[in-house]
Length: 263
Ligand SMILES: NC(=O)c1ccc[n+]([C@@H]2O[C@H](COP(=O)([O-])OP(=O)(O)OC[C@H]3O[C@@H](n4cnc5c(N)ncnc54)[C@H](OP(=O)(O)O)[C@@H]3O)[C@@H](O)[C@H]2O)c1
Image 1 (tube, rainbow, N blue to C red):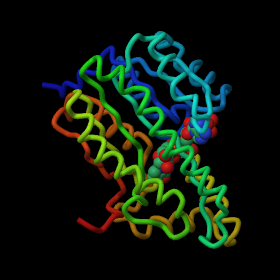
Image 2 (image 1 turned 120 degrees about the vertical axis):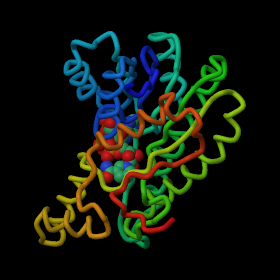
Image 3 (image 1 turned 135 degrees about the vertical axis):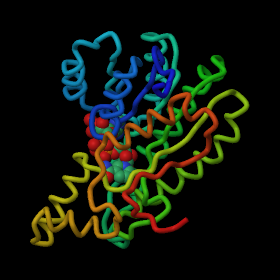
């Protein structure tokens, strides 16, 4: 018998839903007959996603907004309720942390990194909880990153945000369990999305190496010497959003090609 996800007709908010891991998750959720509300800043890209999914248009809504704006979170939840009357799943996949040498990173870059991924995540979670409590059911999946457990000296703002989100995921699971709400995280290693390809390009330029050399160096620590596909991560998000994982909460599932060599 095929595995039963029981996701049909469920509704998900996906922050960072226009590109990369968030977008791949949206496509997989549509295949599961779910409704999705895609969140990101660029309206044009969001609109093009709607066009791409034309045959599923009943299942897709877009809500362009900047998650660093504290009022956006409330608007997102209200919009989702007005369109689909419920919020079953929240996927927090928006993120864009700055890197560099520690002594050269200004406060502004630290603030931006926390403001988007950490506070953005907290604020949206806070606004979906009342609806999930009422339903006595809800699933939240945070897309974090392997640097949360294994900090990268050139990506300390992102690594620190990720560490904070790992703690949030574990601690909040304990609070939300009594309401039937599960919260988990996926922790990707290097994954083939625009953000990593842009990073390879700029590293190649600054070091006079080819993009391929940079990629190979980057994957040196991996056991599986390949960038993950965004779909690899999306499938884990589907798993954690579905009934297959109904006994799992407060957990982080790593998909990093064996990069993290600790137990
Ligand atoms: N790719 C990897 O190798 C990797 C590895 C570990 C962890 N991760 C984590 O996985 C998550 C997704 O990464 P990705 O590679 O899929 O990134 P991506 O392709 O760059 O997509 C990021 C998404 O976030 C949205 N976004 C950025 N700033 C925003 C803002 N202020 N308000 C609203 N939306 C915003 C972007 O759309 P707009 O720019 O239009 O707003 C886009 O939809 C991130 O949190 C990242 O840290 C990725």
